[in-house]
Length: 358
Image (cartoon, rainbow, N blue to C red; front, top):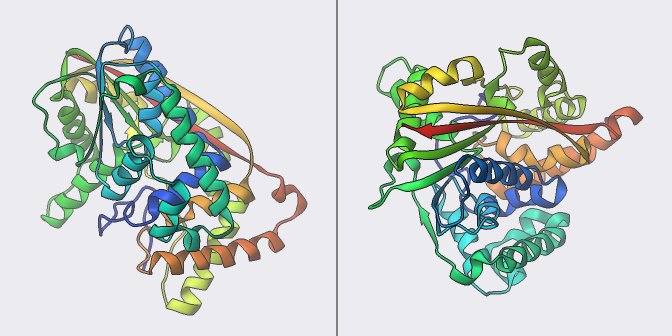
C-alpha cells in the first residue's frame, strides 16, 4: 500500500469515525492550533460581516466543536453546525448539549485503551472545553443545530448570513476529484474548487460572508516566493523529527504487515494567485487573504505522534493496532534524536480567505 498526500482522499469515508474524534481532540491540549485557527476565522467573520450578533451562521465541517465554540463567543442569532462524520457530531453534541460525565462517556467508547497515557489530559481538556462553551452568553439562547451532513448534499430552508469553513474544504474537493477519476474523467482541481465554493455560495444570502481557512499543506503562496520557500523549509516534510518518525513507521508496517507506505506529501490545491478568479466563477468576490505564521512552544517530538493517525488514513489496519504501532515508533524515535532535534519546535501556517457573496 502506498500513501498519497497528507490530506488524502479517504477511500473508506471513515477516517473521522469511531474513536478518531477523541484522538483528534488531543491536539487541543498539546498545541491548540485548531482552537487558535477557529478563533481567527471567527474574528475575520465578525469583522467582514459587520458583527455576528443577530446573524445566522453556518459552521461547515464543525468537527467536535472548536469553530462553533469560537463563533459562539460573538453571540450570533443561531449556529448550524454540519460535519460529514457522525462520530464528530455525536461527540460535539455530547460535549456542548448534553450533561453526561465526560470520562465515563470516553471510557464506554473505548478511548482509554486507544489514547493510553494521553487519556487523562484529554478528559480534563474536554471538560474545560464544555465548561468554556457554557460560560458564553450564547449558551442562554442555545440556538444551535448540529447535523451530520456532507457540505455537497446539505440543504437548508433558509439562507445564512455567514459561513465558516475551517480546515475542511480540501476534503470535499478531494472527494470530487476521486469521483471523477472513478468515472474515467480527468479531475481538474480548479473546477472542483469552483464547484465546492459554488455550493457554499448557494447557502448564503447575497452580501453574505464566507471565511475559509486551509493549512499550508494544501495551499501555495506562489505570489511571495521567498515566503513560500520558507514555509516549505519549515514544514513537516522537512522537519527531521517528522521524517524520522515516518521512516520508523514505514519500516514497522513493511516488516510486520507487508504494507508499503511512502512518506506523506503536500497537495497544493489552493493557489493564492488563482483564488480571486475562482471566487468570481463561484459567485463571490475575494475580499481578503490573510496568511498567519504560527510558531508554537511545542516540541516536534511531542506533537507529531498525535497527528500521525491522519497520515495513516489509508493504512488498512484496526485503529487500536495503528495506535500501538505509533506508540512503539514514538518510543524508538526518542532514542534516535540528537539534542537539537529533541528541542525543535513545531510551526504551522494557516491561510484565510474572506469571500463576499455577490
